[in-house]
Structure formats: C-alpha cells, structure tokens
Amino acid sequence: KAGVTQTPRYLIKTRGQQVTLSCSPISGHRSVSWYQQTPGQGLQFLFEYFSETQRNKGNFPGRFSGRQFSNSRSEMNVSTLELGDSALYLCASSLVWTSGNTDTQYFGPGTRLTVL
Amino acid sequence: AQSVTQPDIHITVSEGASLELRCNYSYGATPYLFWYVQSPGQGLQLLLKYFSGDTLVQGIKGFEAEFKRSQSSFNLRKPSVHWSDAAEYFCAVGDQAGTALIFGKGTTLSVSS
Image (cartoon, rainbow over all chains, first blue to last red; front, side):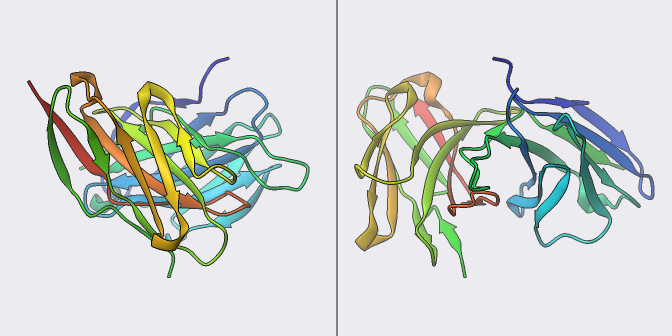
C-alpha cells in the first residue's frame, strides 16, 4: 500500500506571497493532520481534517488554513508568507474508527518551504 | 499543561552498545504514546506505539519501549545499536481521539564506530 504523499517536496517563495501544499493520504485513511517542524519550535500541530471538516486546530494565526476533499486528499494554504514560516510541513493520515477516534498517524516525507 | 520532555538533546553511542532514550510526559487523560524516527530530510517513521495492555511494547528495527505510569515515562531501548540507527528520535503523546499529537523536542542519536 502506498504511503502518504506530499507535493511539492520543496518550495521557495518570497515574503508576502501565498503557498498551497498538497497531501494524499494512505488509501482508506480519512483523517489528515498537518504539522509544522522548525528547529526552534520543533513539531507543532496545525490542524486535522476528517470528512471534509476541520475537527481540531492548533495555535497558529489565521494565515494558515486548510481543506479536505471528498477523496480525503488535503491541502493547506499559507497566505502573506513571513520569513518565520520557513519550515518542514508534514502531513499525517490515519484511519478513523466508527467512534470518530483516530488510529496511529502515518507521516509523509514533508514539504520543505523556504521563504526569502 | 500537556507536554512531552526528552531530556537528552544529543546522545552518542558506540556501535553494538545498548541504547536508552528517555521520554517523560504530562497528560491529563489516558495517554497514547508513540516513538517516531526521522532521518535527515525525511518524514517521521513510526517505531512503536502504546495504547493499552502490556506495558512493554515491541517495535520495528529491534526497538522496544516501556510505559511506566507511576513515573510518567515511556523510554525507548535497543540492546545493540547499528550505525544505521543514527537519526533523530521523537516521543509523542496523544489522546483517544488521537487527532493532535504533542511531540518532544527530539533526541539526536549519533553512532560511533
């Protein structure tokens, strides 16, 4: 079974621009979560989507947004990019049980975003 | 506040020696605990997880971890380290909903020959 895929793998943008990152979950996984990884702050949760709805959100400004499509693929968008948004953005997918709880999160390779 | 502490930022171990990476957590609910490994430029690979039951869990690549509720710890161990184990290791905690993992800052493992 194919793993989580993320595109693109690398991005270079300038301050003020916006960017869209894409994540395709493992087949059958309906929950997608996004994390930001930086040397200073480590791994931080951005948000989680299930059934095209955001169920949980981390402590990030409104410039960070996401969505999920009916095929469970997800995108995240960052508007008005700042230098501090340079990071590795990781997507994770997981099964969702009938209770609504999720199983283990499996991560993709990440998208490395550099903001100049 | 919910948190995960990995006290060791960097550890160097000789090839063939044993390894123990420490992880302490602070979590109000019943914790689900994970260890992930990250090689440079890569995503996170799941090593093992603890949901319930036997407090000693086995993972991939010969790793194991022991959950000690009284000490709020979930330390990762390996009896004999290989050079290919050099990477960054992250401990994480989640809840039954499992949607938002809280990660430690990570421990970088170097393996010397």
